[in-house]
Length: 292
Image 1 (tube, rainbow, N blue to C red):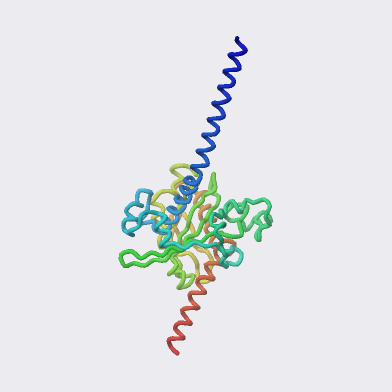
Image 2: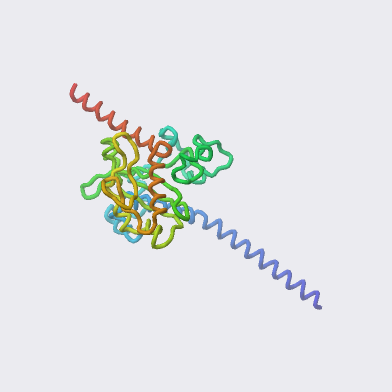
């Protein structure tokens, strides 16, 4: 009798385990697409928060933003206003992107152990200003074109990342594309936002603070020779300087270093120079044609 009871208990437990495993596996499969879409939407929202820091200081601002543009949500806005493409970080040229590559994750690409990178930061540690240890060869660029209340804007949004005090900070930097077209010395920031980090709350964690993020729009980026001058400093004195985070010297330095890396020739610098050059050349050709 006891052995029969034990077999019955074991059988019931086994069946329950199998049923639960099936349900959990099924739910994971069914929810995978939804989870991936939520991740994509979070990324899109952060891109827009960098591009429109004054209109979108936080997550609660999106409903009004969508309403003002007459769109239903993030997917519709991106379809109408945002162009995304990939560039070769080595030469700044656009890289053709297939449908299968639309989910390309450049951070994961940098960690691929089987690749042979065009820039090996482990062999060139002095060039690793951002402290990322490995740089991918191809990165995303997002161009936002928006015309609201008669004000047309064009913004280039670049993914950036780099080490602070305790963690790698991941975010987006937005550049005014029209200012870039006037040359390096005219280039200005539209916004900066971070979506992932592990910095100390109240100190380095203030990179999330809308008050600090509001200090970035309008800051100049390059000098006339394309040298990156944008920086975070304790004693801001000019148009290139942003006030450092109080009590967070190392995090502030990390932000400056990652900006210098990603805006320089080892990051998106070559792409930005080529884009500006192309626009300036087209402008000169147009004026020449008009004059002829």
